[in-house]
Length: 311
Image 1 (cartoon, rainbow, N blue to C red):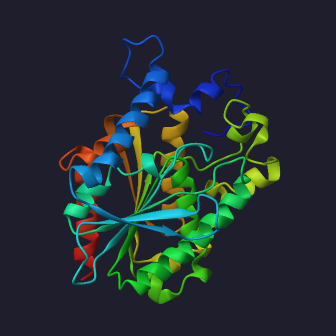
Image 2: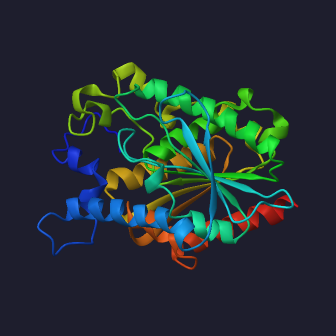
């Protein structure tokens, strides 16, 4: 957690989730092994959607013409009736991963009647972080247009890691989204996110050669922890937010999630903070592929509860 008066010699380690896994301890470098495993299994989950489960996909573009402003919408069959839409935003420290590593949650949600939109975005340094946030804002407006065109009954969103940081933008731009559209949003899941950039932007291993394009002032401006949430909460009174962290994260990551949840709560939002036992930064996403895993059960129960409450 950001503390300008504390000299933490392990600060770099605190901002690398791979160093805090309890798995792969029999490997020479557990931090590398956990990342390699994540890339392998999430890619497999993506490939299995069509080959194993017969799930179909629409490949769409929300911006640009030759970059990664792309979104895949997964579904089982062409719906005869309007369906709910779940939107997933991947992590990767705004500089790695793509939508092919972002589909673990798709099959369980599709089996429960959802369409699932998995977005991609331009990584730094192709764009600065400020430009990426602008592109993400444009995506949010696009996804509400898409939801309206497809007669979506309700929307929910999840962002993991850096994706959690981006997702916070949704709650911060109510003026760009009509009240009618906001009323269709049910649940937001902020999973193992990072919400205060004042420390990390200065860490060369995290932000090599300042590929984020930040300075002290812009790092503050792009930190959801520092935004005046009281100005935004009344616009989202019907939304339930879940800020989720994992036991095997660094203290810095856990406390950022805890503090962000409190910040939203103090600002008037409906928020639940949940710390999951046993999970780390990576398998909390890997296990969303399993219908009855603790994380998937939690997500589905939260979605179902919010849907019932709105009806």
